[in-house]
Length: 378
Image (cartoon, rainbow, N blue to C red; front, side, top):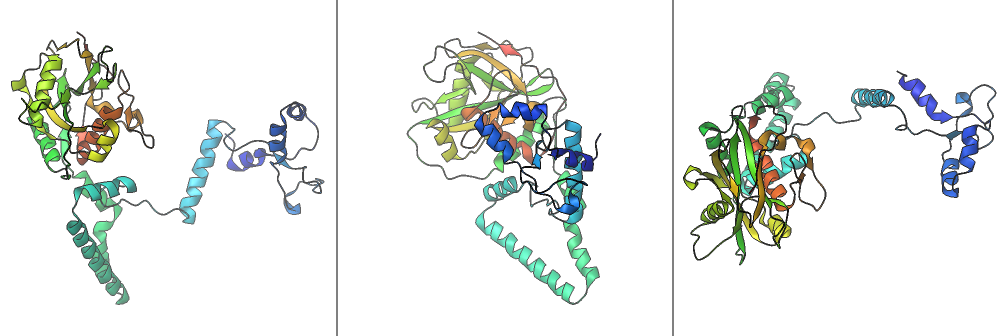
């Protein structure tokens, strides 16, 4: 492995003789030639090699970019710069935030989970603490100042966050984990709902398959006029004539689309409160997601309705917790790529919100599983 010094020096080519590479470059387009001649290096006399001429501005031209090298050399460069930045104080020390380390996620959770009076009170308390600390510092009362600030040290912040409630899903969903998820849904911030003429509900069906916690999905029939062949959650439009509630809508639609799920075995955990503006932007309908646990479906013969559903399949929950399997693009709903089909649009949005707004409240323990997707076709 080359050192950072030798790597850096190899980036600049100060050879003025004509080489085969130079000959090849002469045959390139005018744009490439212009770009090459613009990659110049001016060196002071003290840094020039003995006998090297420095009069011509074309004499020193750099020919290799830093990232145009082997991976091991790049790793050396990145590690060296990282050490220099930390030692030189160029980068601020890692901040842990109030609830989350990521600033954007921290701000989102604060805004969506706390009222304005609660945030204002917390801000006032924090200001009182800072003013008291300033007074102690002016009095040179370091011992008392140290005791006040000690809880804010990173090690104690980490300890407090590690005390977050665990959800043990090593053997699938059970009564304890279901109760914790129900409490998480209840604690979600209530949103101001608007009257909509078109309302719909979907089920986010949690289930167990061979002791593994999973989510059940549908793949719509190719014969449908709306969203054919797309992955979705069970659900549909509200029937004002027969549905007494949005939960009734969800359970009715799920039983119509998938036979084999006994309604009496379904446990309703609660409503996943979403940003209605974002939902309406995605589908133009006021959709309410209802989280349910449909039980252990390992040995159940699920029979999708062929008029609406081409197949239904399960995806292990731990795959959704892997951030690398999510694609986030500006102005688009999150897309999940860890299943047999892309999960995007409203379905991707709902699952992503469930992961971030409910599961992220806990330290989730799941079995490490190889990706498997049991499918149930008509």
